[in-house]
Image (cartoon, rainbow, N blue to C red):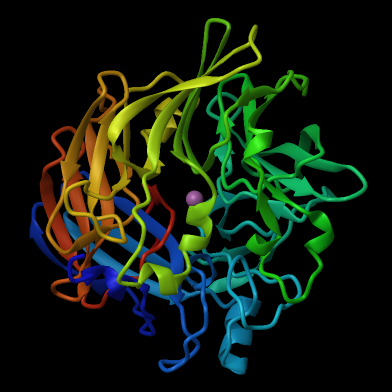
Length: 465
Ligand code: CO
């Protein structure tokens, strides 16, 4: 095991900055105008000496913002002022959340640290509890809890809503535990906050799911055998993941819903696997293709405790890029492997290829010859040719790679990749800009401090200054 230069990525960032100009190297393209918003945990211990058993998913949410104009970059960051934020600071201990133990549980906790999107023309931060928090895109200040204007139920949701390119509506689902358990698949128009139910999918094995798939005509809920016993959900002392049990005998089910009329197709079954992230999905003659970053089982979920991630020994985690093919005339689902590399936090040229046949995906990855407990390279996979391109720099640990299209581009990969990289050798982070076609560096913008490892974000061509 090498020297674990990534550990800084799991330490607190207390400083909040406002529109600080960053020193750049190389060439940030002058056509790259707009704003990159990112979300992720930034506080893992309530104070410097405490050793709470904090799960990566429970660190307190911080929003980051990179503003691009004419080759210049400004950076801002701010903690989300959630009830979990105030409670943690006041009590000096973390709340019991997704996987953290040892604290207390607070009602309607809303540490929304996973993703960022726009709902009803508001910028919002998302997590897997149905709570959503609106923030101000200019100064990143917390505005208020965002509520939908309807009474759709559910105790869990995903932080990965799809934006449907055909209908221009957001699609997501909630999981409701009750007498009968159901996944409520819904859509909501771009400038509205009233959700419309597409279908309620009944289940007798409600599962933990972090994302789902959306094609032109179908939404697919991939139901892993990581099953929740709903009777435990109210237990004051249990973290959310402690309610899950891995039951591989039950296999993984693809629950397919036709969006136009809410018809639920028969379930398609694959051998048990788990995943956090779907990459993309699309329709073929008589079936569906689903590309998924797949794990053998649920071990990773617990592995993501910060204490494990910072540990000297960790068992290698391999996230396999798999292509599952659902055939409507067959019950069983098989897969093929699309890349020899381990890949997660997948992204694509979403605004043109989501739900459609595509060629390129991007992700973070752990080098097979330089194994570390945290991903240490970026990859671009050509899912049609099966080739993989790598960007790597010693002691550097990447965040999600977001694709931004060059204006008037025609090729799928004509644009840049933006990724926040933690430079462990020099104890700070930088925003890396890669040419998405060659995967070579165009330029970078140095942040003075480190940016803790986060999850997801979004780029918009608008300036918020
Ligand atoms: Co995610």
